[in-house]
Image (cartoon, rainbow, N blue to C red):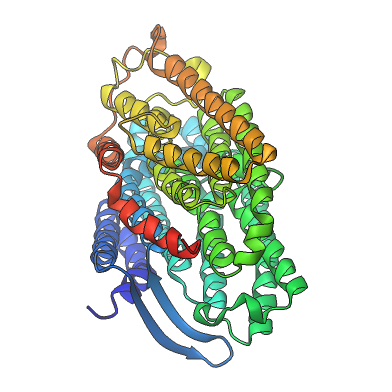
Length: 519
């Protein structure tokens, strides 16, 4: 196998113009299936490479920055697989959702013309102008989608600090345009807020990278040795990296942008931003702090632990107060990132392994929940939880998938969420008992309290949306198309299989964490 990871990363970027041209010439059907085929091929490449164990590729770059390479190991493999699995599934899901969005956008732009001429909406939908609009928008959407997926994958496979930073910033560009062009509400203002926060975080991250690279004399991961970095500079670099990645994680105090961006973004993009993109911050902390700066990690771990608890409780409490279903899931994502930070601060092999598994389970569970919200937006036309109810009888597939997604986030067996939370809290308690730390014991208790908050807002949401009395205006609601329900069923099946056979990922994660912690 040659150039496997190079293909997986760069094919979506190189073929994104083809997706755009196909969309403009042949419409959303052609560009959807083309994008799906590209991402499916790349996903298969990643899975085949991961099955070989640790797999890496290196290519000459520039003497100034070092080598350009890609690495699949016990840390990056689960992240890479989940990012591309989710991206591939969401391509198909995007088609009906975005066509409806493009059509609605077109109608709003031509509302006055329609009102004066008296032409019916059905006539407009069949018009040449609308078809051209949908085709053009579809091509642009899927081209940006492919670049977004590529940026996320490149970040978790990078083997060089500057390469990591480049891909980290590449994620931001298509995400900004996806929100600014097709978001809802004041989408351009929200996209600028998203850009400002995440770019500022990336700039702080770059300062940490430069501090390490210039101290060591190389930006390549293999050359980074903490002993070669002056102690005060190592602490400065670690804090800068944690703050920069904390913005991406939307951790407490740096979370301001997330509820706006995720609520405003088109739902398929929300289902990528929330489950896949923000969790890459946790990947960065493991790779850049825990692996490369272990002494700094030992000093800072307790602060990560406490920061995680604060994020868990804040996000959960805010989610409990929301009526907009997408905004609720956005605050839920903040809370779930708190779980990851809580695990990263546990200073134990099992706590770190649980944190990585929580990334996987959050991607599956929150992906399902955002996709369910998208179905409600398409079929019912509202995001307000108070205006819904009794939809389980009308939309059994969506309701079942939403319940499975909620159970995954709550950590209820047999979903993958149970294994993630179980290992996470086991590791945190283990460290608290070994150190005899009262502070860690209190943090553990507050962490358990946060799980009660998680169950509260998700069960309350399920009850109000899918059960109880069906409002009269929703009696004619039907299940969404297979383009939307089939991808949800695949994710629901995946989370249950992973809950029963967690070693699919644990057999890679735990040995890696043992090595990082020197066990």
